[in-house]
Image 1 (cartoon, one colour):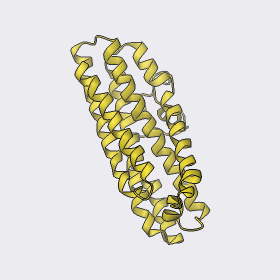
Image 2 (cartoon, rainbow, N blue to C red):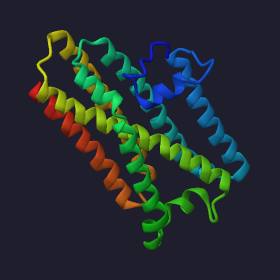
Image 3 (cartoon, helix red, strand yellow):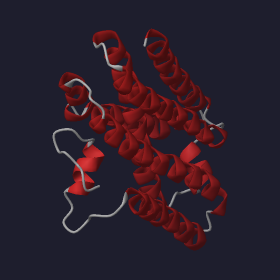
Image 4 (spheres, rainbow, N blue to C red):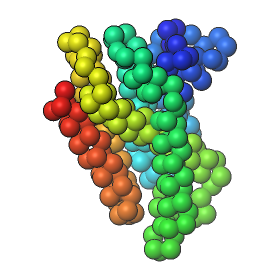
Length: 227
């Protein structure tokens, strides 16, 4: 994360890059992120006997780590390309991806702790037991935030891709760079379908995840056709 430009970087990059003494290659940072979260999942599964929840937790950790990889890759690609300052400022400097992540997270919590129990099917207790342990709940909420934040990034990358296509006339090199970035955003969207089998007890979450992925792919598809 050596080349972080704090005026043109994701909030995630800015926070990690600001930590004193942290200057490691992307692959190492991603490996550490996965190892820490997955290690915590394994430890809590063993201590609290929550092995049935481990596949769902691992899937969420994979999606969160892939989201971090997407952010680092997009950041470097978009900063290296000769793109309009107005576009890169909106993508990185506005921090809208964080706002979208917060909205997604609050919506998820409202569903899990208010709406879902009313239907008689509590996904939280299905995965974490009844009553759920505090450490397992803490880790679950932390991983859920990580996933929601990355979902916000995917949405913002897709929306700004469509705006970029409509608002700017890019040269061939820049078009190749943004096309590669858009393909990676689409791939990350598809990867999120990995979560669907684990939220089937909550049909609204299935609809939300699948609908989100379809919408992101549709927006990127329109941007690609217009480009």
